[in-house]
Amino acid sequence: MNGETVGFRGFIGLGVKGGPPALEIPEVRGPAAGLLRDALFRRLLLLADFGAIVGAFALTVWLSSRSLQLAWTSIIGIPILLLGAKIFGLYDRDETLLRKTTLDEVPRLFQIATFCALTAWLGGGLIVSGSLDRHEALFLWLSLAALLMLARTLARAIALRTAAAENCLLIGDQASAAMIRCKLTDHGGVRAKVVAHLDLEEIAPWSTDAFSSPRLAEIRDLAQQLDVHRAIIAPRGEDSGEILDLVHTLKAVGVQVSVLPRLLEVVGSSVEFDDLHGVTVMGVRRFDLTRSSVVVKRAFDLLGASLCLLAAAPLLAVIAVAIKLDSRGPVFFRQLRVGQHGKRFYMLKFRTMVPDAEALKDSLRHRNEAQEGLFKIAEDPRVTRVGRFLRKSALDELPQLFNVLAGDMSLVGPRPHAVAHDDYYGAAISNYAVRFQVKPGITGWAQVNGARGATPTLAIMQQRINFDAWYVANASLALDLLILARTPLEVLRTRNAV
Image: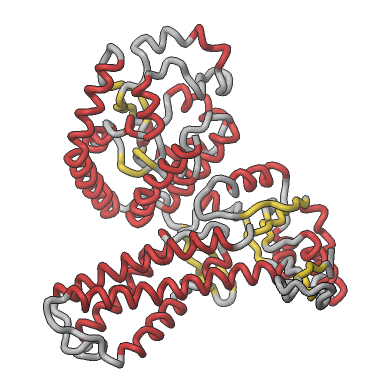
């Protein structure tokens, strides 16, 4: 395919018979196409930031009760802010990421908005004629942060729709290939596909004499033929040296590289790199929270659960009435679950099944989709009409806010499983017990990463436990806020996918 061309005929519509010959331009493929794709994201993000900054200042001046005007020196301020965003890495991070998201940038965007608002407030005519009062500075800060997030989200959505899908070469075993293919489909912020799959043994020559001109030319031609923009590498434990050479080789020919970090699946990403006189050592943080962090998390849970219950009180009442009108039986469903350090508690949910659901289980065992000894049906006939809506919208989980107030659960943490599931998977999955080191949560890292509501096969459950282990290793209030922000988006995504 190397050297393949596409036709582009000039002078269209002139109607001249036997007009000028077609202009042949080479089709952009492989790493070069990936570079163009990355450039589109950078330029749209730059335009988005420019529009957000100008828009925030214009709104502040327009809505001010005083006759404020932008000073001519503000023309210098915009490039400085854009340069600050560049220094923060806000234009280059997308080229290294498969999933393009604005949520992860929120702390940095708030830092830029804070710096901008403080400069405008304390600048004394540097940006606006006169000076901003406290209310105007506060409005500028909030509006700039909001517009930056909104504009960047819109810019990424446009870029994802405009740019071609990111073609990926998967290097690893079949299990890793299946997992990556699943993650690249039906997930927000991702537009990529696996166009080729190679086993690690097949690329052994790539790490031998990798930087010789013939070898680089061979790999560059292969990347163009396969039209590969990015390589996703799933290494085994024993090939660290070969993988390092492989990464260097792929980067040398312009292919973006993503690596599945097997070590970080266990220790998490919250590590400190320690330079031990030229030797890099990773310092792994403790898996449990400090006492002060536990106090802060508990206070956050109490405040959050209380506010949510107050705000949702009318909705809770409507759901309770709907359940009673739809079928006889109690409003709430209580089920024994295992919490932190093995402590057992009764988890609350809105009842979504008919009252005699347990007695009907034997007649439905031929439709069971779960592993031996467990029971789950995707379209369970025991679920009521109201219950089906509550499950799809995740509103059946709202009563667990009372479990949070009681201290049995947290707003964020590994989802508690049924006791039968704990017994079965605890024996089948080696790192299953790690989830009991923290309080279970209403939502968790697994749920916002596409592991919500799926039939719990052994492979799916292993993936969930890996997500839970990652959360335990990285637990923090900032991560909890990120998970809470992503939860409604994930609920909407899975609901629309049904």
